[in-house]
Amino acid sequence: MKHFVIRLLNVLVMLLIINAALVFLVPPDSNNYLATYSDKLAMIDTLKQPRIILLGGSNLAFGVDSKMMADSLGCNVANMGLHAGCGMRLVMRDVLPYIQTGDIVVLQIEYGNFFSGGNGEPETLALLMMATHWRGLKGMSAAQQLNVGRGMPQAAYTNLKRLIKYPLNRTLNTPSSNTRFVYARSGFNQHGDEVNHWTFSSQERRVDAPSDIKSVDESFVCWLKQAIAAYQQAGAVVVMVPPVSPLSNFRAHYAPAIARALQAIGHPYVTTPQSMTVPDSLSFDGGYHVTRAGVTINTLRLIRLIRLTSPPLISPP
Image (cartoon, rainbow, N blue to C red; front, side):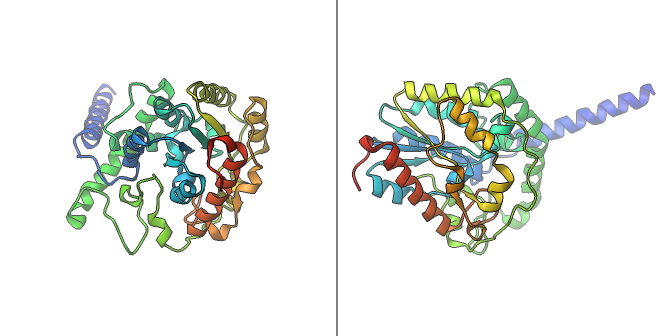
């Protein structure tokens, strides 16, 4: 038994060494989709006022035409949306230092944050840390750092696949493609919009089975109230808008308890969640991602809502 335990420990140590080598020694993927996070923070750092700052996950990355919004409202627009798996706690923490008096901050938060606590998903957080050279790791909460650790095996596996594919791709970076959609840093424009998918047809994917929706995470709601207060104290006007969502995805992931929770903390949605849905025919590849036509619809809705909620801060149509 003793020899078996020793051998098992040796195997575990060897696996940890291999895992660490794959994570820390393989060069980062400079075209990784999540590497865009650094670009977005650099963008907001230099963006001049008046400004509209969009905060959320990939519903924003895949759902907004920022140039259309900027031209219509007479404001510069920064689309900070990237991936719901980053967690709103991380995104709102990182953006807060850049907030200036007079900013309009539009929150379009994917519904899953309200049930999972907003601490991010292990795999996404680990990949985000690798893609951004471990930016902000020390400032994370214990729960976020734990998720990063839990995501390390998948991050190591991702790097292993990059190494295996190197002879075929001739690069360790995500290769771009003109024939099929690829999640890549190169797919974003200067405003932070993912525009590569605009040129591809819908890969309509319905969400047939409802997710296991639990009770709203009260700790997340309390944190959100405090986070919004910090943004307001920094001088921003915060507008809470439901995320754009294909209808089947909405039915699977939304619960009325979310709207009630936001109402209770004094930051209700400025429109009904149902009004931000689109037909499943406008789903791009599932989840909250919409096609080019869906992008236009969502952008026009956002323009109207911003005009209604922040009229003194924007130019007339």
